[in-house]
Image 1 (spheres, protein in one colour):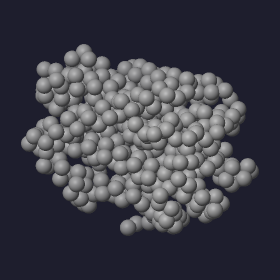
Image 2 (cartoon, protein in one colour; image 1 turned 30 degrees about the horizontal axis):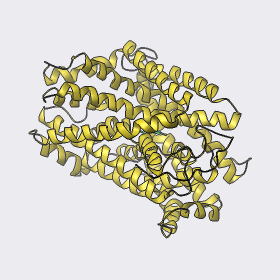
Image 3 (cartoon, protein in one colour; image 1 turned 90 degrees about the vertical axis):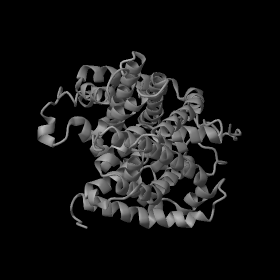
Image 4 (tube, helix red, strand yellow; image 1 turned 45 degrees about the horizontal axis):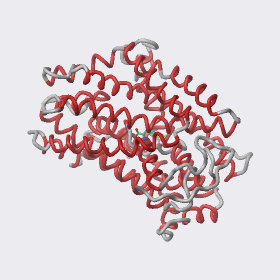
Length: 467
Ligand code: PFF
């Protein structure tokens, strides 16, 4: 696919891969898109759009991607490529070794730790659906029976624990061995396949009676249903889905060649991510309205809807196996980027070996994910919900997506806009880019627009502001 680009010199401080790892521009796009496209697009976006009334939420999310997501992705890539280091070291290089900004890197490590702990539980659900499809468990069942299977899985703590453990071990195994060629090569084949299967599904749902209603649910804004919490969720999700605010893109950017056009690469990654999220909604909501389901079913939405339509088409069993397998694969390319942030931090900051830096944090994340795996069944921490108001899984998801990622994002924007050495940033931004003149627009977006939007959203959320 992409032509090879010259490699930046490998550095001993290493981090995840040898520096300059991406074999081509396409290699980077695939890896970054692999990190961005994941459960956030196919599992989470449709369900939070459903809970928040559809169209208006989707619109806010689009605005958030353009005004906040895209500029921050560029910022992370600029920092990463310029410093060639993982987040804590990167902020130290730009702000000085004693600087408090290094804490921002720590925040990212903590956020990656938390997100991966429950992300792996959801990926486990996808693995369970692969097995169900292989065992032909979805055929000869009514739509209601199929959709109720998820409710059973959700409360089955032991099964969730099993898949969570398996998925974490898989993630640990890959990061342990170094991501290297393997993932990049598989991503070249499997990501387009996921796209193809989704296209087949779109083509199928066009003929469902609820198609038009489904499409208007996604695209016709209905602001009555949108709440303050919904707005924060849309902005938070823009970070989550693009893997921003915790240094994942920064880390991936640190393996980039100087020839890559960051302005263009960021635009491509954002667009691919957006296309998959919208396609996912375009598949799910027509099914919801055709079979009389509710759009606000929460985290089970994708698992309750897609098998229903697959059970009705020729070759549906095979497509179901493939779809859930590819969903699990999409989750894997994201989960390795989450663990890579934590691992490369321990390598760069503490000089740990890659083995130690993968195994110890990986196993701790596995442990920390146990209450999330057991959350539906009320197992461990069964009284958590009555005390906190959300179960353990929902609590950590809420904290990471709605607070930690946006906070990380706003601090990255303020740092790069106001505190980092301007000439150095400008130079890095423009190197290899055909869009040099965009720099000034981006700079002011990062300096003013991003912080204002984020502060308004956060104040709104803590009810200091009441619009
Ligand atoms: N972007 C991933 C998704 O949409 O599933 C999740 C994610 C990966 C978030 C990596 C943050 C991150 F650093």
